Image (tube, rainbow over all chains, first blue to last red):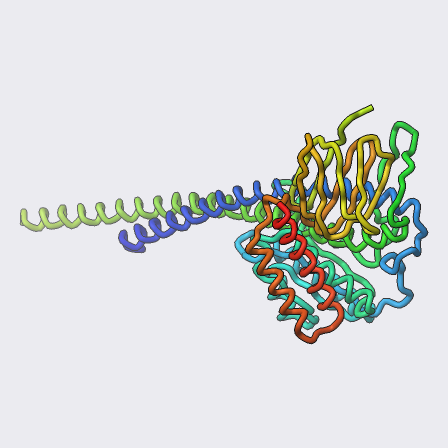
Length: 294
Length: 134
């Protein structure tokens, strides 16, 4: 039987843990709101962008740009993995990493070299330990990033792709489906297939506007396509960030509940122990009194 | 006929500007172009540089780090990776960026890094120039 003091200490410890998990839950929920509002603010840009791209892609030749062209032999595959910087968010990072690992193994089995770009500390740690090459890691980037991160990463990837360093680029990120659901998703970003170019709903008016283009369609496309890759990366990063906070909220909520349960159990043990101590004290007194009577 | 046109400047991070204006001048890919109300549909790539617009006789400036402009139905939508109104430009940051870029360009490096440094320099120079002209 643990002593009364031990149980008391344990209860105090669990209560403190509960305070921490509760605070983390609240912080995560505030950060989630921030991440969601960033997704909202990104939406007008993304929508307009897709509209322009869809419009242009329908007018241009399929092989108009090297980024659209599918190479016959794919030797090297780059995986861009977005994870969070910090743990304590349930199985969120584990899910992303296992997805990346599976994909990397599958690609290796096909005889391709696999290289990693990692945003977020957790993914980088994985890539460093694994047998795959880590080209570049961006640790501690998830806390405060803006479009320039996607810009940099995008330029890096596009340059390496165009110089033939790799023939395929896949992005893995945590899609934010809802508060309770975040899914690791893989998305091929290079080579771009024209089917992947977002569909634009035909204008209902039936009259298509005739645009003047400056420079010509091909020239515009050459400007738009690299940006499209950055837009996709940015979207992946934003989603990952929102997912991370949602996952942490859920994890911390669970932890808080578990703390409550532990406190209940410990309190029960405490009361039982106290009762047992009182009983045995009473027995002693009664026994002593009996002995005095003689 | 409308007398004004709507100007919207959107970046991935926010909506920078949404106003009814009289005239928009933008740094086009092949040189500056101007847009007046009732322009025909037009889609253009933009360079790094200043965009200006007139509103009630006043001219205002916005820095654009390259992007696209779509003009249709009396609405100018500018998509830029970064955009700042002249009064929002961070002068210290622009100066530091300029120095950094110049330093990088003075070192030996491959063509990609050079192109990047040059783009960074162009951005910072345009930002600073805009501040001077204000």
